Amino acid sequence: MILFANYCNIVHSNQPYMNKVKRNPSDKEQGLLDPPKGLILFNDPVNLFEFVVKTLMDVCNHDPYQAEQCTLVAHHKGKCQIKEGAFPVLKPIWEELTRRGLTVTID
Image (cartoon, rainbow, N blue to C red):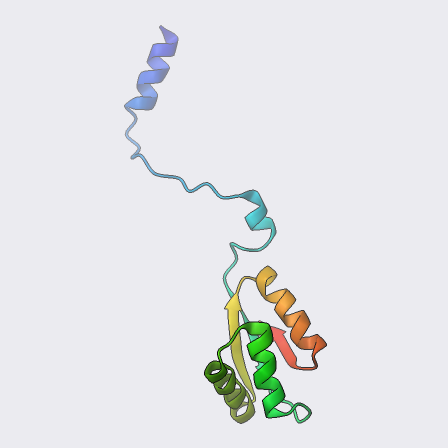
């Protein structure tokens, strides 16, 4: 009899039924649920325009037009956001761009 009463309380509660999104705990640990970050390219007097364009195409998978536009914006304004995403996704890209000599940060 007690089990039936508990069952009725659960089924007939006044709380609306809500779908709960189950999240993988590893997503939170990896920072995938955090707000997106931006990968920022800074202008520098060292790298040639063509080198920066080719590097953005190779590392960030930009098409030629997008890579050229990002390079122009960074040249004229001092910086340009070249990619947006979760920190764990941006970090390897940041590492490769830094290894190739570009000045980039994750903000």
